[in-house]
View: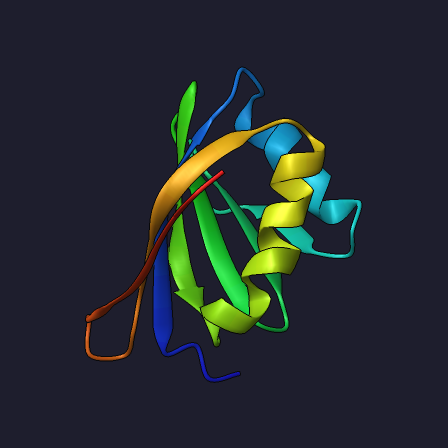
Length: 100
């Protein structure tokens, strides 16, 4: 898996991290607790981390984010989660800002 890009985003939700992680598990992502206070969600094209509560930080490496963004955001949108953030390329250049 060539995870050469990154996502940095904020999820504005009353859900707990584990509840957000479980939304992704229900559509086939792997979920695990990666620290005392955070969860990792991963699939073939992304390895993302969830940190914080209320405004949850979702960040990590992602392959070809512009191709996969619709699939990633559909899970959040179906749960009514507001989000915003940025995708960065391999050289840390800003590829795209997003919100939903």
